[in-house]
Image (cartoon, rainbow, N blue to C red; front, side, top):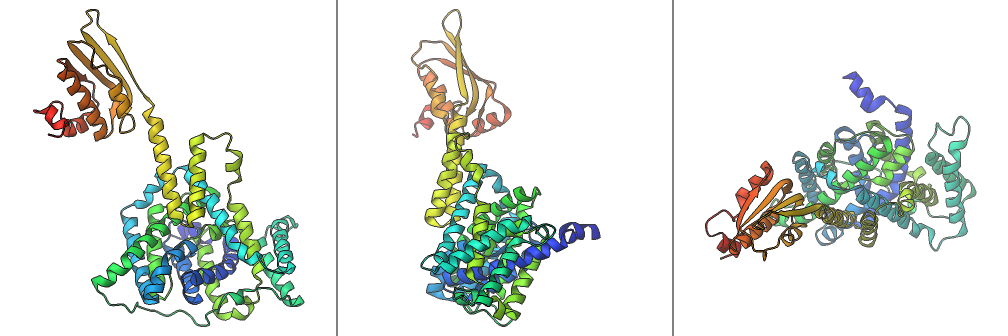
Length: 495
């Protein structure tokens, strides 16, 4: 028990606590911004970020990953908040949590194995671009002081780790925020600060049951939003977990993460918070700052609440330029620069999947659309590629009356037409043997192709013998095939 606690919570205390502070500072302006996007009071996003980060530390499946209120989720809430208000959003958040828990028990997290590496790379690159684009409003129509502060912040972030002794002890993003805040306050720079983003809450959150009627009409209103929030939340969380797995060389339990996200969202809805999910930007800040265990996520949530409620006057002084520098660092660190170098080496299909994923995500600002487009495209390329791995050879006996066809490869919807085209139905034969010892039939399209071949030969007066079906192929052919059943030709023609 103690050994397990140490391995999951306390083997990296200093790194986790310091990383938690950095993440908490970076979460504040984002949580406020996401609340504003959704048309909500800033405290809704801040309370949500605190609650989700703390709860996921205990119930999540990926230690070291940060979950909180996110922009992808906020965009899905806009219409619901505008048309029905906060109470319906809280109800939708609770239902979203229930759907995510159900997804965990249905083991939908295992579906991540169908997401190819090129889709993950495209997802990562698109997020890096979106994170950078989100900083542009803070860098347009501003004075030179903002550019100077941002440049100084980036200098501190990238150069501080090279300082002897202390460079590796303290996360450079934390040093950047502290130094730039001190400079801005001492010089009295008139630049945008966290306080300009919105009013920070000054009280702890309280239990808040959504004040909505428990009727089917309410369910009809919130269910489409809850389903969309659940899908996007799980998709972003699973993708982020995969990326953190790679960064830390450690595995994670995707199905437990699904359940954990659900529990965290239910908890968030019950204290007046919005739905959230894993955040790739904050997770990378956490990992780069030394956070590894569940303690880092817990520390981020606790420090966030303590800072907002008790240190609000100090937090308001943090210049946005400091946080912009941190997020630019995240953007640069998130982007897979190897993917650009590998464009010449990787197959064209892999590059197309990656680029399409990036373009769709950036164009729609919807991670789900981009990943869906990438997965579908990757599946099409794979089906097309496997469809080519089928060969059919034939031999004719000495009498010229019996031809044997030998099929090698996979027969399914992509290769079914090629399968049918390989047979010569006009050849005058007494018997045809189709040897399927080295073939596999995958779907009803393949079975229909076999039916078509057998029945066409029989219609020409040729005897047909099908040999060598393996057990799985024989099962699907026996169940769905019609060539050995009465009225086979009528059934095939749909009569």
